[in-house]
Length: 303
Image (cartoon, rainbow, N blue to C red; front, side, top):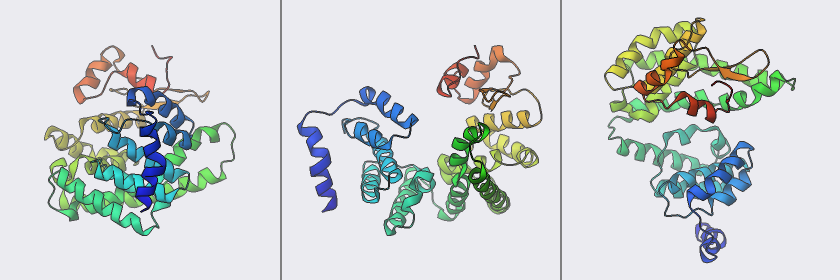
């Protein structure tokens, strides 16, 4: 009944009034609202997009996350169910920070079950025991990381740092636990090949390694490289790890994936070994041009 009423009160008027727009028309407004965390505007703009759009199921998930962020739990679940019904399957949804508020609701278990079931079906996976530990690793890795990253710049500019320091300490404890669990997983099952766990969950092994100390990263680099050669790991993630290790060792990076804040708190590219041929190296692993990447990251003073 709630779903029917929601459709009548919210969706139907948009259709009747002819307000449906293309995603191309509305995305600049949605993106601008995302930049300032204006979740009510995100919802308002997204609801105007034509339901026939190719990426509409993904947009439904965005609407759900926006409702979750403003505390409208029922609407968040409504759009989560709709996104799944429309075919949007993203295993990351299970542990994305914006959905934390939903985790204590009885309906969350059903959402989790649906995502796992459809994820396994979509990727033709057979063994759920292989994927459940990786889901936990992903949840632990994302627990406070986004919040920490969003607040670190504020901290460097004099904001109260007590809370940031406390959640950073908690995240570091979970990172340490994740490394122990990944060691155990790899000892038992081997590298989480894409063919066994899907690309979405294979990513989680990379995230644990990427957020680990240097020696831990170097320990798994050969295994990661072998998986890439076997087409069982994403070469893009491999490029990020290679660059991260180079940065930690004080060497220049190869692919231009690593950014850092300079002494003036300005975000910039960490030095690149061969700037002239960096786009060629990026293309080899499936990365777009450095210029486009830097534009997305808001850096326009490199070229």
